[in-house]
Length: 308
Image (cartoon, rainbow, N blue to C red; front, side, top):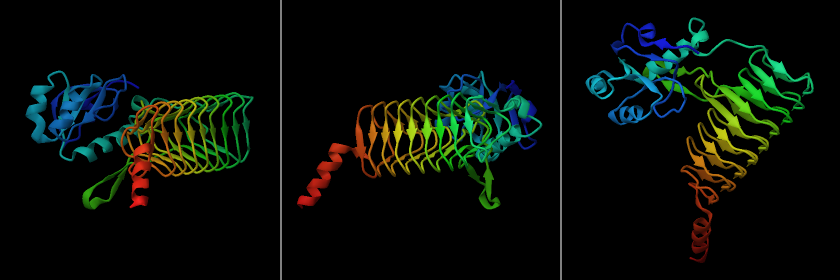
């Protein structure tokens, strides 16, 4: 990925207020370690972007132009008429053939360790996949590009790895804008993913969906784009891990449980069966219910209702 100047990608309807350079796109709180272009639709999000040292360029609505110029003297700034749509349309444009080498990088041939056991009925992209030593890929598995699988993993039949997630932008009366997924999926060593699971790649080129070492995932689990699963996790059947959730080490996620987008579950925590974790779960705690609360509170309330 290489530096891109705002003036190189500006459309006629946009107003370039100050030149700047970026490597990739990202949301205003993203921690990428590279210069990012983000969008800020309000003064609140502008303040958040200004606290992030990775943000080098801003897309803003015209009414924020004066404030952005004053508050962000060191950042490139562009005023655009349709902020959210224009931001993701730019991302899609940079993923296209004209810009992909700069924005995404160049394709590499798929590399499979000679000791891996790949069933001939599996479908594996010919580019940008790596599979480590002694890993087993069963029949009917589909592996898309930008997926890396470590050593001694087991991927059971019917699982799909590295596909696109659910990212569509409403365009008023013009339908939906589908957003390209050009991030990656990284699966560490000794992970087992059982039957008919779906694990999506991340959205932006610098970002990844991650499953940590020794984690075991039961059948029919969905792990959305940008989620990070720690080491030695146990994720039971039909659980749903929503986009950009962060699951710590040694976590239990029970059957049919849901961890909502961007929620953080601390090390050693437990999300019990059917629970909906819509807020952060502290390390070492157990939560239950919809919406999930500490397990002891849930049980006390349940017993109180039974007595009454």
